[in-house]
Image (tube, rainbow, N blue to C red):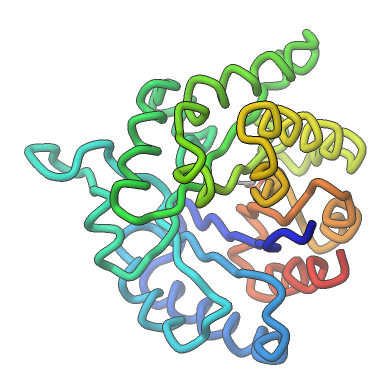
Length: 257
Ligand code: PEP
């Protein structure tokens, strides 16, 4: 079963306006040769203030899409500083990260908040990139599979079959995010296969079509072996997505995988 291959760049709270523009222009230029063979969807997740401008830059380059990094669970109202799914959709973005570990740990987002955010994304025509992952302590205490299962059951598996069809899952071990430590291809594949098994139990055949991305210190040196794993359908990339050459090299690795 062939699944969409995806490389997504999470810029987090980085880059001022001109830097963001320059990075997108460099990526468009570097990725031009790939446009004839658009096997890989490239998703850029800038800070929300740049969603519209990044969308305008990539609009004529259909292998690129734009994602927000977060959304509020409501549609409008007195929520100073927040952005809604409909606002994100109106910028041209079509994806949104939900449940990134930094949102869970630094901003206290719980499974029930994330379930509501997932609903808000879908209600507004956005595809959620739903992030899950275990901490180092949880891994060392052999809790990895329990934690991932509970994050999926409580944040995502309330979706109907048709709602689930637009979802992307990102497995990001917390101990590998921004640390330079990467899960080995064997560790990552073991978890991705586990996630796909859970998806199959709940959603049947659809599980074979849901992309599962790996995230956690992906770089040009480790991308190819990770992407060669049968259940790894691409990457969610933080630090390396801020450097055009590195991000391009990771996208090229996906073409080999
Ligand atoms: C991320 O922020 O989703 C991420 C995986 O970061 P990094 O690639 O820097 O570990």
